Amino acid sequence: MSNLRNTNLQKLPVELFDVLVIGGGINGAVSAAALAAKGAKIALIDKNDFAACTSSNSSNLVWGGIKYLESFEFSLVNKLCKSRNHLMRCYPASVKEIRFLTSIHKDFRFPPFVIFLGSLLYWMIGRFHTKMPNYLTAAKIRSMEKVINTASVIGGFEYSDCYLPDNDARFTFNFIRSSMSYGCIAANYVESLGSVRKEDIWLTKVRNTISGEQFTIRSRVLINAGGPFVDALNKTNKENTEHHHLFSKGIHLIVNKVTDSNKILTFFADDGRLFFVIPMGPKTCIGTTDTQVETPEVYVTNTDRQFVLDNANKLLQLDKKLTTADVIAERCGVRPLAIKGSGGKAEWVKLSRKHAIDSNMESGYLSIFGGKLTDCLNVGDEVVALVKDFGIVLPHLKYKWYGEPDPAIKREFLHRAELMGFDQLTPKSSSEPLTTRFWRRYGRNALNMLESIRESPEKGELLIENSEYLRVEIEHAAQREMVTKLDDFLRRRSKIALVVPALDILSAPGLKEACLILFGEEADAKLQEYEEMLLSMKHSGN
Image: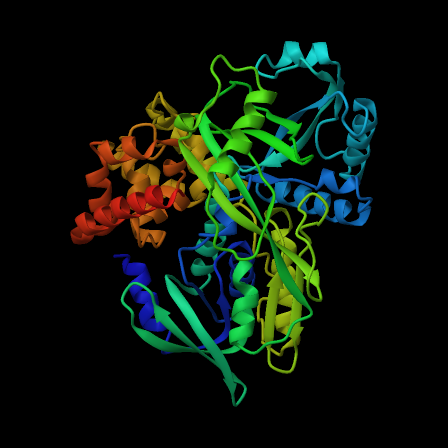
């Protein structure tokens, strides 16, 4: 069991916090990171693992919302493009520009050249921060990307946006890790059972979902960052808000790599929405769907799978059609769509992912609705301003709470890595050099990890084949990343469970050793728990 988690669990019922953040998705993660860096005393809890819901099931894209041009939401596109550019500047290793190769089929609602003009407008709204779009004929698309079925393609274009080379859950967790470095007391698998306010203090009754133990956390301010569970928690806490959520389910399927080109292939699926073929390290991620659902608890249905597979088989020219047997892993989650009032229809194609923060100044209570990865830094800044208005003292208000370490630290890391020939240790199965991966994932901590490998060369070995995780990385996760269950590591701190088939993971000779590193004497129990989870998912059809 994580020593870090146990230590934090002991602190949560004892201290009086300035702010308790409930929810460890992207909205909660940036709220905690921003407030902790500016000197507030912060606690953060999540009833599951961090980023276990929406923030680990996105398309891994950081984009300026080109699709919102069709609904003339120029102000939103402008805001999202500014946010994307800001993330690119602050996280150059994690938020990478990538080309989107878009094919337009005959009988589409707009001619290709009209949509290309839209991409030029998008580029301009984005302050020319990315590469210029190019118009493409069907013949040019055919020559650039053999895997695209161009039989009914009449043209297209190529433009730039961004994606996350690791995954969304890792990006989210890094904000939580940052918040803990600034003093935030965070714990996963701690569920809020409800909050009441007495004598200007919020008393939140919580339950450790691992042990069943219940205790109370005291805070001056309460932030409901429960993602798709915001409304349910507000109902429990008897908080009335201006906004509420509608839910749209989206799924992705991960299959073996269908093309070696490092581009995102973009189409319009049968339902009219954008359909992506996205690089994911050694694999390819395809999707997504748009289905209105009533609750956040969702799973992949046979209909969902078939929709994605049918579109992929129609849009791509593959040697062999994709079937369910080709699916390595699945991603399934809901998009929480913020709307005012009650009712409404969750059409992802038409309804934007704008975030909204409802504030109860009288009680010191915030509810964060909607949002997406692209806009996360704005959410953090807005939360800081609102918490300051509640009267919480922020002694380091001007301190910059986000961004990669100073370039001098990166230069030192790269210099040391070159001196020890670090990239020469890169496994053949890796999709990138070790220096690139280590800096993106670990920042300044990568320096200490280099020294560990220098002192003990076996720490540079790959424990699980094709996992893109060395022994030293698993040790780091055990010490600093609050890995409470094996799925936390395989699915969210890493993307191993997304790119390595479950049977290959379970049969990997190094899995047992990885469990020993992560869980010590609980290794066998944690491995059995993971096997039971996989069996349960298989039986439920998820």
